[in-house]
Image (tube, rainbow, N blue to C red; front, side):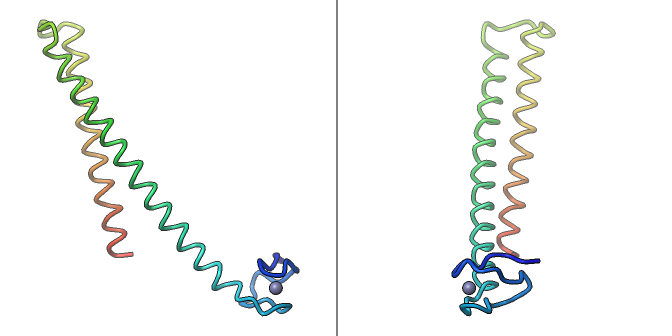
Length: 110
Ligand SMILES: [Zn+2]
């Protein structure tokens, strides 16, 4: 398969390590760009997980507040929804913590 050399834009084989027209190290450039992209992806994933953890905490607090706001009866709709929101927020928070730990471990070993 043919690809464009990033330096001289001529057609070269995608199997070639260097461009046979200008001698540009195609593969080295690829590897570097790929590594940068992977680091960026990992960073963005981590940021997104932290945002989700934050929303999960807000959800948990909202549910907690709802449970006591106006002191609803146990078994009433408001009380049931409040517990549900609390539990969902808590579980979502835990899932995000685990996922953050996993991305950190990947960074450590990778
Ligand atoms: Zn070239």
